[in-house]
Length: 108
Image (cartoon, rainbow, N blue to C red):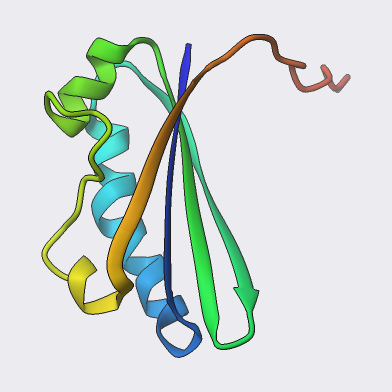
């Protein structure tokens, strides 16, 4: 399994709107792409900016290509991203999952 981490920052005042925008665009696309195993949206408010990280899990690099295109190291950006992202930049990093701790089984 492969983890794909995207990171970008916006002005604090735009953060709530941008979080909704991520859910409507990238998160929706993750969920529609075969081979996606789920995703998390992380947020950190600090000073006058908010950093977002999306952490998505994929069966393979081929599954990531189905989402991102051939250049999987490039961020997948949507029409309004340029309006919100500071410096117009974002980063993507991939990690192979080396191990995991599954959630505990709850009785019930």
